[in-house]
Length: 357
Ligand SMILES: Nc1nc2c(ncn2[C@@H]2O[C@H](COP(=O)(O)OP(=O)(O)OP(=O)(O)O)[C@@H](O)[C@H]2O)c(=O)[nH]1
Ligand SMILES: [Mg+2]
Image (cartoon, rainbow, N blue to C red):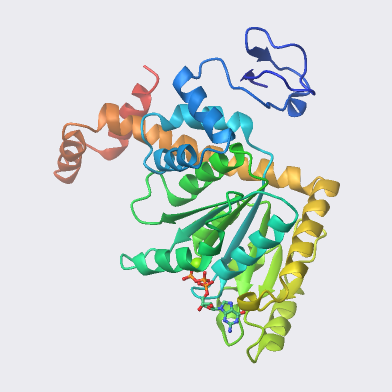
């Protein structure tokens, strides 16, 4: 149990805030920060977070950029934001390029807006160096939302992502969550390891397939069966939707899940909104399944176990690079090893042994 540096004005707080510091030993889960972040966070960061919470879109955009660039102020910002996060539902959408993910995300966002829910969208741009067009495409398709402050859209390039794409996406999600959005949707292409890591962030993962993929369902089955909570067969206006459905069902009969949920299959025509209300209903059904079954809590614990290890790996490596491998040291070690003057095992022992000193 940690020290929680927070808060004023929460109803269900355990104990009274003492100079802004609350020691939490039992029932920490019920401690929900609401209004202000205090403690070791600087006044400047506090003001920044307050502006984000108040709906200042520029402050939010600047925070996301800081996190993407791992700029010096991002660590403090994330600490402050984390305390305020954990309330949004995170929905992941993944599928092949052009499957209609952006159109679908757009439709789902509109549907949630009807219920007055606020939405943050992170679209991960495909890795191609020529993908400027894709970002633009997303912007144009989603531009209908631009006038609506209830929807915040951010495209993120996969290239040049510092500290790993999955981690950056996770941190951006934390910022959007802390900004008070009810939902955060993450769109990512494909089912490579990176994407799987990204959707593991999500409470609900929607895998988007389209008719005419042929053997593709087969070839990506390991990935999609592992991550899909809901299948969407988009472009159901085209021939072959039934075939894709049969293929998914066949694979489902072989797949094992840790929980009792059988991922439903929803057919949509995202381009004209058909099937979107049904999809939202399934998303909500799964969310309440997660709440009722404790599976959601377990899923979050499991995700954090993985993320913690990743974060620790990044942090340790960063530190080793800074303290032990700078000023050409890495090159010197490498040359010594290549020339058989020293062995790498001893060098690693020395470096690791020096950590913490
Ligand atoms: N026929 C048909 N076309 C659709 C449907 N949904 C989307 N499209 C079209 O498919 C194309 C790709 O849609 P996007 O939403 O950009 O797909 P995406 O999966 O986000 O694409 P990337 O992000 O580039 O991987 C667009 O031209 C859409 O208008 C649908 O249900 N039926
Ligand atoms: Mg897209």
